[in-house]
Length: 84
Image (cartoon, rainbow, N blue to C red; front, side):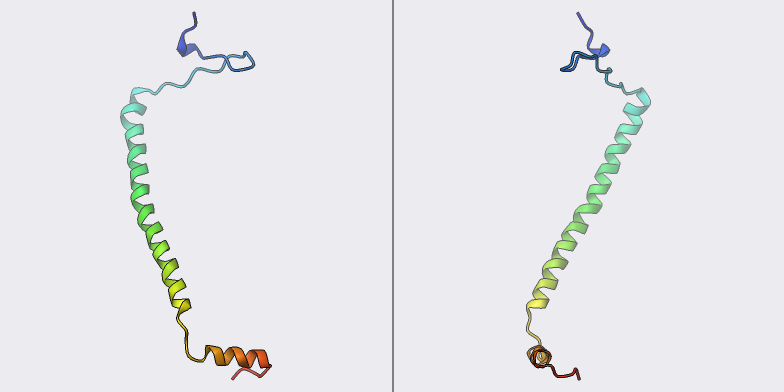
């Protein structure tokens, strides 16, 4: 009978190393700090993603608005006239 802490065998029949166990310091200090860091990153990343999405669609909408003189400038370029 094999103890689970001693490891397991892989498909090739070789022993895999036993998984590392957390010390009390890691379990009660490092793990909660890591989860708080993950939550902080999430709170920062979601508003940035939302802002970038709104900014993308706003620029697309502004580009779609026809501006006066744009057609005239395009016709001049196509005709080969120098820019004013």
